[in-house]
Image (tube, rainbow, N blue to C red; front, side, top):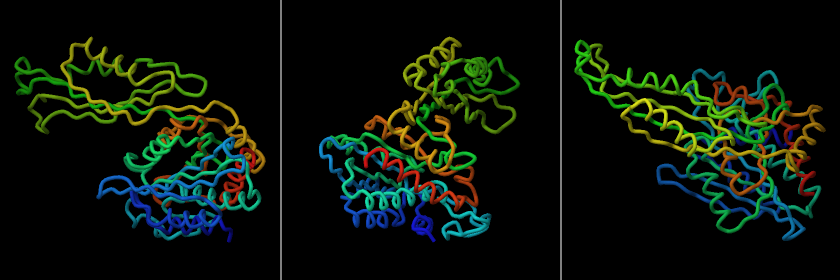
Length: 383
């Protein structure tokens, strides 16, 4: 059994549902300290939601001129769902038909193990590597993400820590390892709209004002708006309703208000303020009385093709014999926080078909190549 597979299994066996780390970072910290990393643990969050963050760094021999490559990820996993629906215990790593099963197998304990073993091999081969190498792991990525990577990035900015490149180990591949790399992500802007009417008896509509009827034209218009045309790397911005609620449950009562939850997944072609302004203008033009609360879930980021993507693509081509697609699809990730302090952020990891699902798994045959890709990327950037 390879060192990468052993570590992957050890991490899966540690129950680390957000925000619990389950001892994953302690295991990783011990291995990194053994090869010369200076490790710091930052604990954040309220007493009932304590988050563990690991920052570890091994400085390069080039001194102040050294470029810094960060490998980032999360040790927390989502809840299992009904355990009885799993074919095997989600926290007991299990092999079937060439696949390794367990919660976090794809998202993202295989990536973490591949990163750590790649680092060990790289340091053994290049003990005086010119560039600096760092690790940023959190236990608050799958949850609210208020006390994880975002806090570490704030702390790194305060002490003027320089970051040049970052690889986030998110499961980005689709059909096979290496086919897709994320060089950016869309932003997320959510709103809760409460349209006000007047409650009344459904038989006397002249004495009431139905907010569903009042808002229907505005909502229909919002679904047809072209918010932007996207750009070379991003699709057009999307506006989608996720929930609508109105009424008391009775069939003879006109509701007094209607609540609509919606979300923008937006590109770098738009700004949060611009989207807010345009949406308010539509609601106002339709004469609605309403309250609207906004939540900015994440800013978009984009890493143009350059030094980092070239090194990663070259490593993938060398190891897998294919050229990956650069993509910005999918949801948000902690890359949105790191991109505020690091000019080049790329995400790459194993296939994502089973993430968050019952019987999550990863192909065992992909584990060693993933480790090799991370190591070869390090060699191309900071050796």
